[in-house]
Image 1: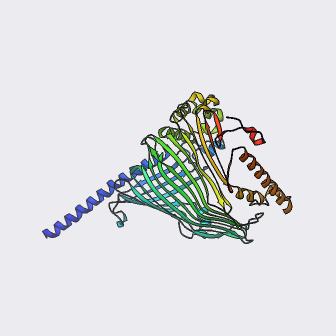
Image 2: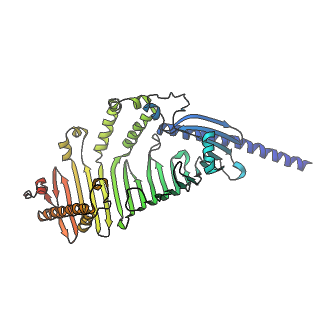
Image 3: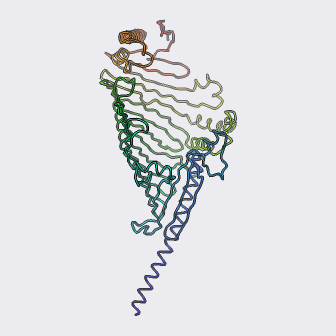
Length: 491
């Protein structure tokens, strides 16, 4: 009997301890979610909570939250700004419902502080319209595992569908979205990956647009404790391919392969660089091939806290209906004092701007441009005097291109049936192209003779520099009159 009594007591103690743990963890998880919403509204006022209901229980809780997508902007644009306590029915909004199971063994499926299952809530009309597409599947669902330290992992998805185009012959096929995110306590850092395998829009008459392998990836860290959602790190958006065929007035199908947009935000001490790289592996227009194509640009040595303060000031517009409804003079007055200080801070930190690479290629060759500009020792007073500002500007640039490639493009433009040439015969289009090619070659010969260009076989090269108010091209002071055939300036 004593043994049975002892076991009963142990079971009772375990049950009480588990119940107390679940209640305690549920309270902490609610506080964590509250903090996330507070940070969101403080830093991203274009997302506004218009309604929220949180029902906390011992072993699980339920939450329903409605977010307006653009804050006060739609109401302000219609001169009917919504009051803070209004439901926001006229604003674009999304409602989500979450079932939050408390730890330490939420749903007896894992060891964690909580597991949240979230779905997008649709009204009856929208639900009925989507039923034919999605069946009983949720339009959006998310599973979030919150660990004991406040970090966690979220996985999310939307279902695929294939449906006829309303009132048109054809269909839309969507392969859905899948993604995941790992986040640290307080969302101080996160990694994210989202994939949309395919979108296809086709019509019975033969036109078709396809997107494949849309991927978004990010790995970022919060920079300042008091300015949330200002992050350093990397992000990438890529598309495997885009193909367009059979569109009216388009003579050739177009295929773009491996499009990539990279953003790198490295933090170096007090300064942040913004480095962007846009590229495409190949562009096919009918049988013509252009690629790879690159457009790389960067802003360097930017004072990080100043950028964060400017971003916070810009975001504040969304949360103030009077500013959204006001005119340009009101906005200028709102920003004037702060921006003067912030602009001077940016200038005195010697910012740099660089076109790191602009290039494209085809079988006839490649064209490439790179340029860099830097302001050294500039002050705010110089902004009112462009000549003083120019004296502080240092810039360099390099250009190289294939003469054969440019000539062939001028003779045979990729889209000869564009609007400008709609009324011309093929012979007239060809004659215009040849005239443009001849003119280009004459200009190249003239500038080469004057020393502004170097010719290495089919390759044309030059470099440019601007320093202390003087522009030089290929090492020679640049004279605009040389473009008209006049002799260059003497050194």
